Image 1 (cartoon, rainbow, N blue to C red):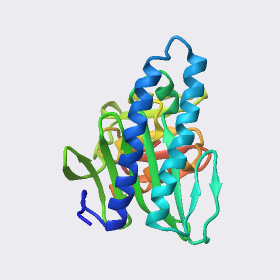
Image 2 (image 1 turned 180 degrees about the vertical axis):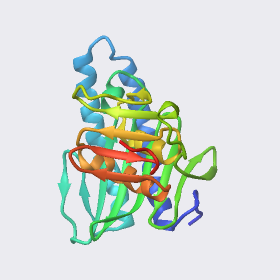
Image 3 (image 1 turned 90 degrees about the vertical axis):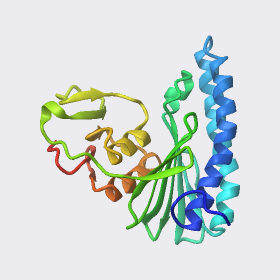
Image 4 (image 1 turned 90 degrees about the horizontal axis):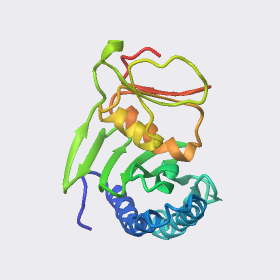
Length: 234
């Protein structure tokens, strides 16, 4: 097959599956914009759209690895036990309000280790991706470029994304975007210097975890999820 992005054939097949799914999602986004007078109706519509994502992309992914399982925030599909695709619509609350800051997060894990990660923003058609021990990249307008975390460490210079519910002190130039998958991708690409979050569903962060690490950053998942450029102390 002709490779669309720098990386393995398997990575490219996963990207093509994302593109096909994203086409329908962009149509759904246009419908949500027409539902803004009824927030309840918009929520129901987005919930059904997320279910369609899972169903449509699963058929494509099983062509990549037929025996793989599937993990989403709503569905667990057992496979042969070695491989698993991890899928989530990140930023669904933004989608509900016709805010274009949302993404599809997709990872392939083998023996409990993430090998391929993709975070795709359907509206601006920008892809962040990584393969284990091959670095992290961004793809847009038919061009791939390697990304790295920032090198900033002074508190006054930092831009930090937060997704926390308590009243703890926040430092730096604070951002709350509502899309953890893109927050992690933006740490990986140096747009943010760190991301601090309450615990999240693993399906939403599996891809971002590999992106951050392959871009030279650090990520810990304990009482909080903390991703940094490796220079920020939080």
